[in-house]
Length: 107
Image (tube, rainbow, N blue to C red; front, side, top):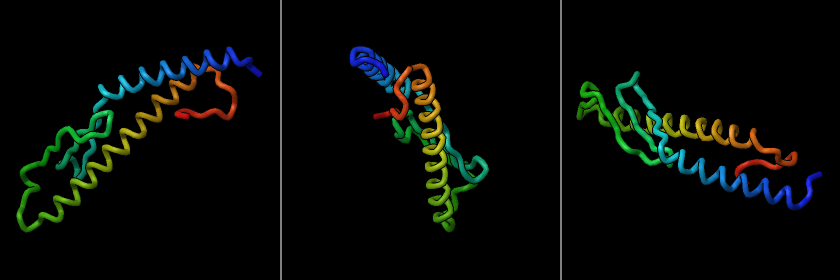
């Protein structure tokens, strides 16, 4: 087992890497889509909707419920992609550290 000083150094490395990852997430953008690409939602790495594109052929006052459903589906699709990307990045971060077994990130 590692000594306390070594564990402290590893914890400091994790904190530094987490700060780096937060900065990196700010620059990430993912696009979720629904309806065969007729509706697209652009999310930042902080899960904030930045933009929504709607194909003009989708807009029909009598089918507003369809549009609303497509927006929900596209937003959820973008969020899932963001979560997958974040898990991948966190896995890369944890893989380079020699943490004791059973310690998972984030804490």
